[in-house]
Structure formats: structure tokens, C-alpha cells
Image 1 (spheres, one colour):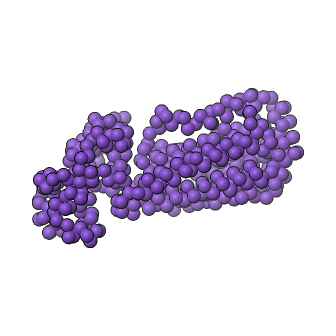
Image 2 (spheres, rainbow, N blue to C red):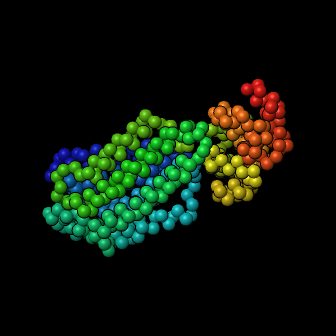
Image 3 (cartoon, rainbow, N blue to C red):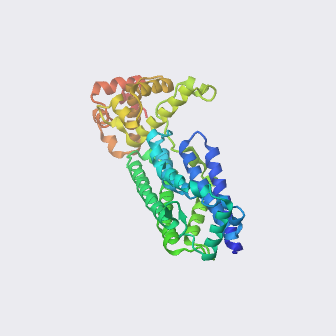
Length: 384
């Protein structure tokens, strides 16, 4: 029995549980962090079983053995849903998302005969496994642990590629102000994707091809996971803004009634509107669709997967304006920001600014500008 290894795995279990519980309960309104919290709880449960194995206590609790195995098929999907929700401000679980968890369900079903087997048969299998020092030759349903580990490796790799794709698309935004405001999110996702990739290759390779149940030293796999836990804990303790998700720049002023009542009257309908607005604002600030002069609510509806009517009602609820007025607010804010930060814009004519910001005519720009700023563009920019 290795007391050091048993203590090491118990510490991993403890840290993982704390991180998982903080993520699940600290930000209950953000579904993406719930996914991430469950991911850490699953990892922690696996380390509890490792602690029981290396301490020899697993023989006293045989029914716990293999309970973590099916849940490891959820690692990849949970990480992907976490990154998707974080970068897209998408707080919904879609019906199609259930497909991500089919491998978990299938593996759980094939392990039911083992779960229902007698205590004596489980203890006999565990004693034989521990005596032989072969943790990967044990059958988990139709396949051995070796092949299930290999399938989990492939699944996690596929999801990791999808996570990098999400980050690349997010990082394509030309909105420098938005990127600067969300550096912590970008750096966190880069770290998370990188450490996940390291664990996929090094960790899984080590466990599948090199490790054996009789090992008396800390594996590369578990050392990498320890680094991951420490770094995650650091982010949660010293970078608490991370739990708030994407930081949106306030472009359109909220209706005062909403500001006052937002915490007092959170009806189901209002919460739905708030969710649509967050997705809409994220889309506007990441992708800047307002720069297209033919943008309409139907186009935005297809882009953020919300109906035209709900988008219009959400804008009315939150800002007390219609969709064209909302878009014009973003266009004018875009002009103001570029005049401040982009030297080239100081040589632009008023028409040049208007067309660059998505207005399709001089008259449309002047009309929108007077309504929002209360003066003509020339007078306004001379005074600023």
C-alpha cells in the first residue's frame, strides 16, 4: 500500500470537489459554469476511486468501483458545452445537445449487469485485479478498460478540436475594445484548451499504453491534472471576474424601469428576454453585424437562434426602442470609438464615417444621429 499515493489522490479528490461545488453553486444562473462544475465533480469522483484503490479500501466498498467509468465519457461534451456557453453567452440546453451524452448512456447500460452483481463477485474481481496489477485488462461491459480508455481519448480529442474552433471564431472579432475587456476570458480558454490537450495526449497515452495497476509513483497523468487543478483554483480565487462570463460593453442605455425592477420582478418572460439580450449583445460586440447596411431582424434571428418577434420584444423590454434604433445606437458608438482610437478616421468625411459604420445613406445617418445625440454629427464631433 502506498500512503503517499493514497494521500495524493485524496487531495486531488478534495480539490476537485471544492472547485466543482464552487462552480455549480456560485453562479447558478450561468449554465456553462454548471457544465464545468459537473466536469470537475466527475473528475474528483474518479480520484476518490483511485484513492480507494491505492489505499486498499476499495475492497470494503466494492459497489463504488466502476461508478465513475461511464461519466468519463461526459468529459469531452461537458468541456465543449462550457466553452460554447462561455464564448457565445448561450445559456440554453438544446434538445440536440442530448446527443452528446449517448456514449455515456450506452456505457452505463452495458455496466448495469456489473452494478447488479453480488458483493462477493465484485470483491473477488477486485482482489484478482489488485493481485495481478492490471487495471486495464478488466472488462467494462463489452470492452476492456483499455479500449474504453482509447475511445474516451478519441472523443476528448474531437471535442478539444471543436473547442479551439470556437475560440478561433471568437478571437476573429475586430472589436478591440471588446477583446481588451475580455482578455481574462480569452486567456482562460486558451489555458483550458491547452491543458486539456496536454492531458488528452500525455495523460491518456500514459494511462493506456504505459501505466499499470502496480505503479508506486505519481503518474504524468495525475501530475498534469494537479497542475490543472491548482491553476483553476488560482483563477477562481484571484480572478473572480471569470465567473461572470463575457463582459459586455454597455452601448445602448437600459430603460430605467428595467434597471430598478430587474432584481425585484424576475418573471419567466423577463428572464427569457434577458437571455435573448445577452446573446444579442454578445453577437453585436463579437461579430459586429451592424456594419452591414442591409442588416435586418430576420438576419439576426437566424444568427442567434431566436425568433424575430422575441428579439423585437426583448429590445423593447430592455431598452424601450425598436430594432432599427437599436442597430443605429451600435453604429454611432462604432463611429465614436474609431474616432478616439483610430487615427485614420480623423481624415474621414462625415459620409465616409456613416458608410463605414453601416448606414446606407447620408440622410439616414443624420436622422439617426440627431435622434440619439441631439445634434448634427459635425457639431457633435467638433465639441468632443
